[in-house]
Image (cartoon, rainbow, N blue to C red; front, side, top):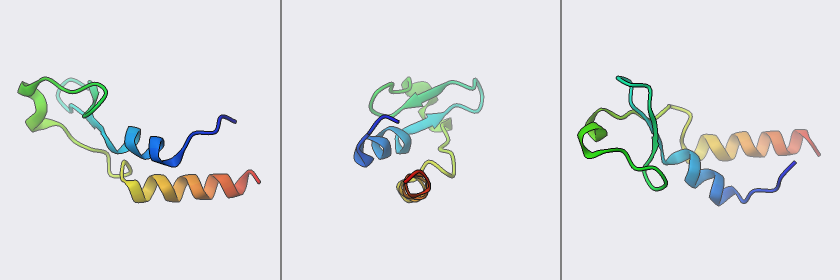
Length: 64
C-alpha cells in the first residue's frame, strides 16, 4: 500500500467540489472551477479534515 502523508490526503479531499448541474468535479487548488459555476458548487459531507483523518486512522490500524 502506498504511503501518502496525511496532509496531502487532507488537501486533496477537502478541496474537492462538485457541480450538481453538470456532475463535473473540481478542486479549488488543482483544478479550479470556472467563475461562472463557483456559486453552485457543493462539497460532500464526508470531505472534511476530521472525516479524512478519522477514516485514515481507522483503516491504518485495521491493516496493522
